Structure formats: C-alpha cells, structure tokens
Image (cartoon, one colour):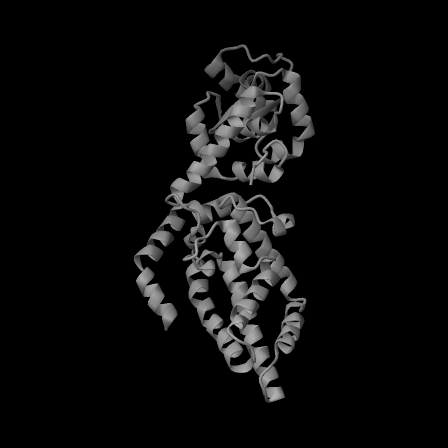
Length: 338
C-alpha cells in the first residue's frame, strides 16, 4: 500500500508512535535543537528555516492540525517554563530567538512534532525528501528488528504460544465433528474453515495469503495474532458442539444445507460483535503498521497502532520470545501433534 503521509492521519501516527523508528530517524538526521527538560525542542522559526518555508506557513499548519500536533508534543510555554526555555535557547544558539521581551506565550515543537509538521507540509521540497527518508527508515527498522521478515512477527507476542497450542486442539474437535457428522466429501474442511475466516476477518484463506504474500508452504494460522487464533478456536469449539448436537438429534449425517444453517445461526449471535470488532481492528491495524499489508475489506477498522503495540512486537521481550520459539520449534511441533 502506498502511504501518503500528507493525507493520512493513521500513517502519520503509526510513525509517531513507533519509538524505535523515531530514534533511528533522530540519529540519522542529527538536527540540533534546544535542550529543554530532557528533550530537544524547536521554535516555529527553526521549523520554517529547516523546511525552507515562511513562518506563516508553519502557523497555518499548526492552526489546521492543532489537536494532532498537541497530542504529539507541540505545546505552548508560559511563565517560568517560557523563561527557562529562552534561557536554554540563548545558551545553545545565542540571543537571537526572534521573540520580543514582552512575549508571554511561545509555541514549541519536540522532535516528533518537527517530523509531524514535515509529514503535513506539501509546499516544501525539504519535507517531501524527509517523508521518503522517514518511510525508508521505518521499513528498515522493522525489518532489522524482525530479521528481515515480518511474516511471523505475530509470534513475537507473549500471548501467542498459549493460543498457538490451544487452537490446534479445538481445530481437531472441529474437523472430527465434520468428519463424523457431515455427509460431504473432503471439500467440507476447506469450505467451513473459509467460512470461519470470512466471518471473523472478511477474507478467505486464499485472499489472506495474497495480502500477506505467503508461499504455498506457509501455514496461514502460523501468521495469525493470538487474538485471531483465540477467535478461530472459539468458533471451532462452538461449531463442533452444535454440529454434534444436531447430528444426535437427527440420528443421521447432516447435509451441507443443515450445516450452513447451523453456521449462520452461530455467527449471528450478538456476543461475537465486540470480539470480532476488536479482532478486526487488531489485524488490520497491526498488519498495516508492522507488515505493510493492507486488508481492504477491513479498511474501516484501521487505527493508528499505539506505542505499547510497537514495544509488544519489536521490543526486547518480543525478541526473546521469538528466539525461544525458534529454539523450541521441534518441541512445539510434537506438542501440537499430541
């Protein structure tokens, strides 16, 4: 998916929230600012010079995107904090701050909001070049954290292992119920698996594979986030029970029409709504931010990925979990086979 940072708040916020990428961008740029309260800060005039636009252009973007910029670090200094900032500016840059001595309020930007403004500016060639650099660094950072592939980034989550092992048991219950109770050929396993996938995240296995660019040897479920695995397992467990009950009541094998009705009644139960909504949000948002994979059918569920999600999948703990999974993959395989 081509990301237009100037028009997509989600794309901008995904970068702002990715502290790993922000750190890499800051080191790469090496731009000098004002050391203030443990952060590097910039004035409106400094941004205007950096992006080669006039002050009024910066002011216009601050006015039109005030909420976004304030949420990401732009703030107004007054009183003692303003005095301290002006003192810090004078120490780092001299006395020419372009601010009158009677100024009572001053807007300042931290490094994240400096980037935020650059992701918005359409009048600046410097900002355009910066946007491309930012996107390249974000991709490189995620790839370096995941060893060059994000296919199995889902397995860097502490909750994945439990869901991974549990789901296989419910999968077997479901396929056994189809085998014992449904009068159809082998096609029934793929058919009702796809129905589960489509019900939960609006894509069948083939469509999902294409979006994630999976190879034929890749198992779809090995790429699912733990929450999706839990949802799939819940469907399989519940459907298996209902199929067996209907089979017992009928005293004969069920037709595809009867199983279709069971499935339709099952998926329309209202308790699924919040669980599926949450699952779709997580899949769509994480895949766009972490895998650069866009689920068009889930576009309405895409939201900026929170900071803690980046830590969850890219942080030190995530690396240790991935290492543990790799070191014990043969053991895990045997556990699943049992």
